[in-house]
Length: 231
Image (cartoon, rainbow, N blue to C red):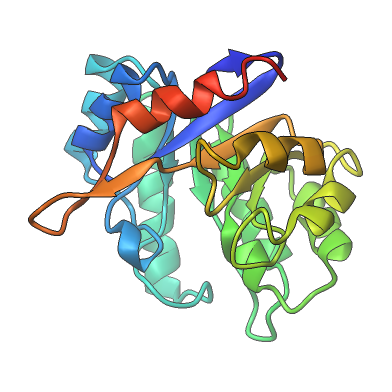
């Protein structure tokens, strides 16, 4: 967590190297994952351990066993449960999950089950929300009823800035913290915060390396944080 005038910055780190870069840039909270080009998948256990215990970062772990939709088989649900329990053992601060029903609504039963399993870790409901075929406030209320701590959303738009009007509607309507993410950069973060009223933002601050690997850039992390200091 990094506080600038009460704004919390979360850096999406798709590898341990990215988590290191986030820390170098001044970040103290990351969402750890892998395979960012497909939307992110569950990171390795070794990366989780290193992020929590060696880097000392507040670590939120994406728990997503595969790419694609957010309707999971019984075997996949069992894998998610095992991962959540292992995250708890490893000292993770929060897990990031998302579940939809076959008709595209927030899966309240499964979400509530995972929140209960994860306790006392916090639970973030991720951008599965942005694919829900459900009115945004109705979907948020469903998430709140499950006990989730926060919602990561782009306002059901391709980027958070494009979805700013929807995000503003969500802020403060329930006890769920709204974490604005997707397309957040050092250049647009101030506008996003001012237009939405969010107290938390989520960005990858990524660059593509010569080998095609996507990695967090420490310079961009620092720039993003510097650009919101005066808000």
